[in-house]
Structure formats: structure tokens, C-alpha cells
Image 1 (cartoon, helix red, strand yellow):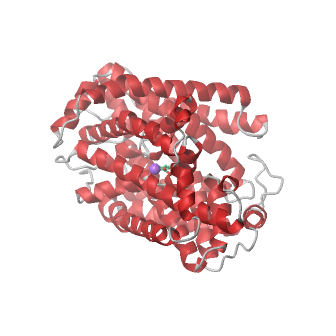
Image 2 (cartoon, helix red, strand yellow):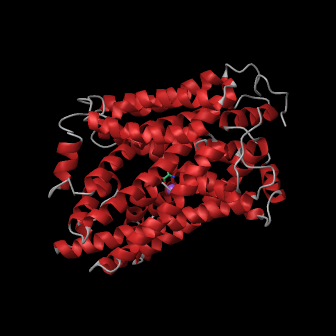
Image 3 (cartoon, helix red, strand yellow):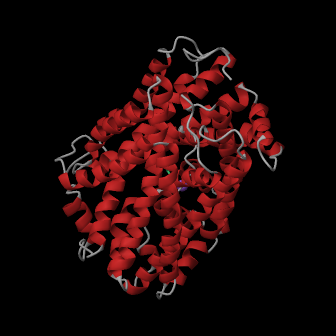
Length: 502
Ligand code: PHE
Ligand code: NA
């Protein structure tokens, strides 16, 4: 079987950007910037982007492009040159992707429901009460007592699954690339239209002042720098098999450095647009409610399903601006979900030598079943707990291991050369310095801090047993199965692979 390929360079970039731009850009980044020094946050953020984001992206694009396989197989092959097994790291990354896939789709389901609600503001005068008590019916549930199955949520999630399934089932060119070529331009246009309207609402500009007003004293706070670094890895979808899979479909003649720069810059540029949009809305809302902005800001799920609906209620033509906002969220989420499912599917294809279509059916139906745990009253709590452990521990661990293996155990100059040989402009020695020294040092620091904090304080108010089983237990199980599956391959390379590979 010949490996599938992207049809065009633009198609590849839009797909990579589609993966990178996700809910995190819209509901996580704006608050993070506001909370970590406003305008001054751009200094650590740009620093993290240049020292970690761009080099990491170049590294993953080079690896995928050079080896033309997915994560487990790439690491198996790298391990082979070192004489020991590394395939498990690839599977650990695939498992991270799989776990994210099953809860991320729940959020896309909620945004689809809210897209429906937004035409008539069905959430009423009290969006907070509506979301928690009428939509989720959260009640007294916990991450391990999920309450009842919610058919409405399940239906919305099924629609999201169906769209992802169709894209991945159809294939790289006709499915994934085509979907992103339609969705990404739509997303940019919708966000620009929203910004264009919101900026003329009273108070919007003062909202922007809050976002951009620099507090340079915060730059002395290590917390601010670690927030910037943590956000960069998550926002770029690097370190969990996705970008490796996408770049493995690049044609032999592809410009690695340029593609990586474009993907990173478009993603980070979009984050700033999203910040302008969200803070414009918050500024308007504060003005209308005659509250200080500091009382209305929020992030994450609260922002999307409580604050924004409240703001939409106050807007002129809410039945237009509301749907526009929620379609944007759906698109941002779906394009990311497609990429995660592709990462898992392509790993299955590579490992078991099955064709795309049965692999997609298998991955999506298993994922579908597991994801139904989130279509419950307590789904939000389970999601929150799992998401914390995945983002703050598993993902950082995976990124750190990947970096150490590639830049310390192997010769990073091979990657560097491969990238430069296949690029119009070359990256210099800073690339090696960032990947060998700066990024691992900072990643290790953040990971150590997160491990310590979580061990000592736990996360949130969740019962200890839930944290042990669903948090630590989950990460441990993922590692365990990754190592186990690693040993199903006879050689440290890959069973059917001629030694050394190509
Ligand atoms: N990059 C995405 C974001 O910022 C994160 C993500 C990508 C999450 C792919 C899951 C899957 O939201
Ligand atoms: Na992103």
C-alpha cells in the first residue's frame, strides 16, 4: 500500500492549523493572557513560541516527513538505532490522543447543543442555572458517580462523531484535507465578522484595555513563564502523535521549516484574535451590567457555556451573533478532533497493516462507546479531572521524553539537517540550543512542579479515590499498556521492518 499524501501545501497547512486551533485558543488563551500580566504576557508567550513551539514543530514535521510513519513506528525505528525499545513512547502518545478524543468530543457535543439553543437563546435569563441544572443536570454527582445517561447530549455527541468519522474514513486528501479547506477559512471569516461587529458595541474597547494593559512586574513571576510554556505545547498539538501523523503524509518535496513557521504563527495569531473577540464581548457585558470587568471574566467551560450566553442575551441581533460564535467553536473543536482521531487511526493502520476504512470504523466505534461516559450528569466532572491529569502530567511527560530521546540520546543534528535540506530558508544553531537545553529544562521544571503540587494537594475537591483511580491510575494504565504493546513487536525495530528501515 502506498502511503497517502496531501494534495497541496495549503491543504497540509490548513489541516495542521485546524488541529492546532482548538477550543484552547478561544477559551483558554484569552484568560491566561489577562491573568498573567496582560500585554506583558506576550513576552513569555512569544519567548515560549520561539524557543519551544517553533523548534518542536520543526522537529515533529521533520520526523514525520523523514520516516513517513506514525508515532509508535517512528519511535520503534529510532529505538532500533539505539539498540533498545522505544515503541512504547509512541503508544503512550497515541493513548493520550485517544483519551483526549473521548472527552473532547463531549465538549463539541455541548457546543452543538448550544448552537441549537443560540437561535432563540433557549438558555433563558440564567445561563448558569440552565447549563448546570437543566442541560447537564449535574446534581450531586462526582467523577465516579456519573448519574444518568443524557440522551440529548448523546445525540449531539453522535453528530460530532459522525462528522469526524466521515473525514477520517474518507482519507487524507478527500476527507481530512477537504474538511479543513472548508472549515478553516470559514472559521477565520466568522471570527473577523464577530470582531467587526463587537468592536462597535459600547465598552468593547475598554475590554481590550484590560486584556492588553501590560503589568511588567508579573514577568518576575516564574508561574507566568510556566503558564506560557504549558500553553504552547497544548495549543500546538505537539507531543502527542498528531503532528507526526499529519507530517507523515507530506510529499517528498515539502518545505519543512516554512510549513512549521506558518502553522505556529497562524495558530498564535488566531489566539490573539480570539483574545480580542472574547475581551470585546466581556467589555461590553461589563458595561451593560455596570460591573467591573474583573467580575465578569472567566475561562474554559464557564466562559463558553455561561458567560458568553449571558453576553449574547444582552446583544443586538443575538440570533445572529450567538450562532456565529457557536459555529466557530464547533469548527475549532471538530478540526482538532479529526486530527486526534487520525493520529489514533493511522497508528492502528501502521501497526496492524489494516486498511484505512476498517481502522477508522474500529477506532471511531470504540471511541464512541467510551465517550458515552461523558453523556451523563457527572460527565463534566469526569472530564475536568481527566483533562487535568492529561494536560498537566501525561502530555508534559510525553513532550519531555520525546525531547530527551531525540536531542540527547540521538543526534539532533540529523533532524536539523533534514529540516534544512528540505527548506527554502534554514534554521540556525538556535534550533539545537532550544531543543537540547532550554525546552527540556523548562519542561522538566514545570512537570516536577505539577507532580509535586498534585501529589501534595491533589486536584480540586474531588474525592481522593477518584483522583487515585481516574487521575493517577489512568496515566499509569496508559503507560502500562504502552509498554505491554511495545513487547508484542518481536524486534526493537518493528516486526516486518528491515533493520534500520529507510
Ligand atoms: N491545540 C488544541 C487547542 O488549542 C488542543 C487540542 C488539539 C486538543 C487536538 C485536542 C486535540 O485547543
Ligand atoms: Na491551539
